[in-house]
Image (cartoon, rainbow, N blue to C red; front, side, top):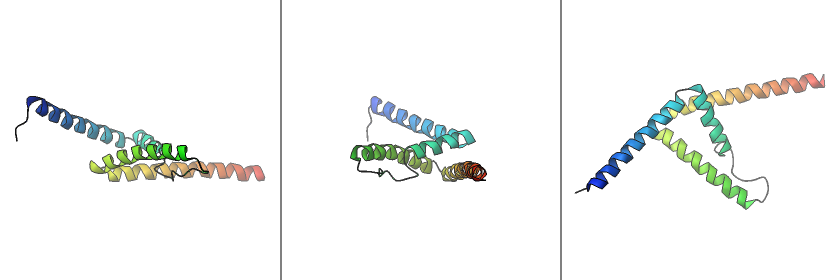
Length: 114
């Protein structure tokens, strides 16, 4: 199949962009701070919880679902580059931190009651 010079250039640009995306995700996942950022993004984009609002707010649900789709696309990109084990590491670190904070809150509440 014949490709015009412009089509060849566009194809090269697409491959380069995909490579930069891959490198960026690998960079984020290789560092604890990057993994933290990723998990906060997933939480804020409702990937870790339901997009259903607590009341009948259709517009909010639509907004949440749009945010969730962004997170799903990022998650799929991580899977595509073979970064699932690093994503799992990010989840583990995140949940351990959240649990430690909840333990501190619980201890402070118990102390307050005594």
